[in-house]
Picture 1 (cartoon, rainbow, N blue to C red):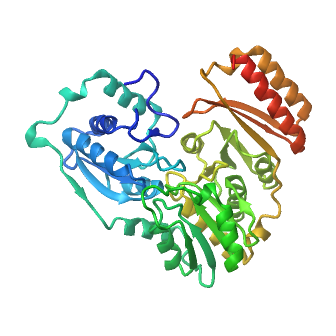
Picture 2: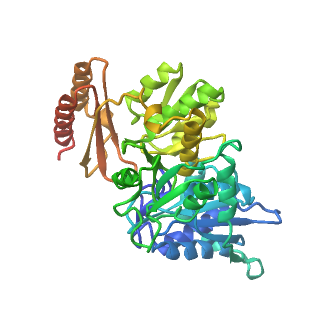
Picture 3: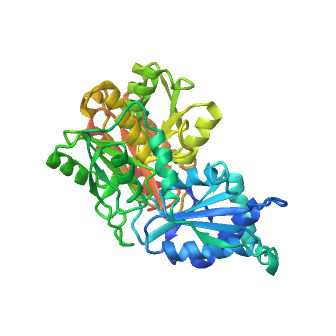
Amino acid sequence: MSERRLFGTDGVRGTANVHPMTAEMALSLGQAIARVFRADGARNRRIIIGKDTRLSGYLFEDALAAGICSMGVDVIQVGPMPTPGMAFLTADMRCQAGVMISASHNPYHDNGIKFFSSDGYKLPDAIERNIEALIASGELSGLRAPPDEIGRAHRIEDVAGRYVVFLKKTFPIDLSLDDVRVVLDCANGASYKVGPTVLEELGAEVFCLGVSPNGRNINEGCGSLHPEKVAEKVKEVRADLGIALDGDADRVVMVDEKGTILDGDQLLALCARDMVERGVLRGGQVVATVMSNLGLEEALEELGVGLLRTQVGDRYVVDAMREGGFNLGGEQSGHVIFLDHNTSGDGLITALQVLAYMQRKQSTLSELMTDFVRYPQVLLNIRVAKKKPIEDLPEFLQSVEKVESALGGHGRVLVRYSGTEPLARIMVEGDDEKKIGEYAQDLADELRRALGG
């Protein structure tokens, strides 16, 4: 195993069939997760595996199953299923753990493996380190089950129905989507069946995009990375709103009836207002990341609600929500987490909550979003050979301080390294788009010099 850390901010991810995303590593990960979660003496030891629609999903699904079975644990394979659906099913079917094979919004040639504990939450860092240590130690080969205890693997084809019923229950029983016209883009990904089914069973007229996966077209020119396609369709068919999911349906970008695109920050502000009005927002705060727009912070202040920021990554948002007792959080990218409903970001649940608010208020989505004022943000990515700690670059830090002083309290500077790529990211936010673009470029040039680029 490579010396670098195997797990990133959201499981193991990389190019399919290239280390670490190889069949051999998937087998080892299957063995390690089975070993970690094997409860000695338990009568039913089983781990559930789902995937999105990538071609390489078949490769990793069978390798993971082989590794899990070799450790004496049974496997349930459910095929294409959204990541939040796997979080739900892991707990609902009382499995020891869940595995999702997906690289989320990445192109088809990438893939990833992420795990859920028996309660449906993503694994904490300590368990990921334990898995890494087991793989690195070489001990797994001596821990395999004897021949009479090898696990069984079987496929269940109809579990999607469980998830559909669960999703429908998050929509108020006294409301319906009769006469609502919705454009839904499933990104040729894991939600291509359950997404249309849920909305249609609630009464909506659904115009579908991205529901013909072929193993290679996931996220390709569609879904939440390309919401302009949904915006065009919304205007063409005069829909009430559009929903653009990513490949594993844990994030969503929405479009109002005028074709205006709404990201995760705007959806968080909208849902926070709904929950405040209904008296169900817990803790007086919403959790988001350092990337969330100042517009979200100001919108929440108008509601008397605070904003708690975490590092980038929906798992860190969830951790802060659980620790603080909050029930709404998310990311600008479209991960919105309703802990009253599910343990992870769920694009379909988010869409249903927005639709419910629209129905309760008998308002269009554009009318509900009039109070949100977005600050311009400029984000630059700089390829780096080595991720030297930013705090060890004193001259660059002085440049950052100068920019922050120039913004005068009406903007922010954020510098961080990507958790999954050899990139440094610089974000400058303020009320003058031209100026912040200049500031961001100056900081990027300064950082390249500081890193010897």
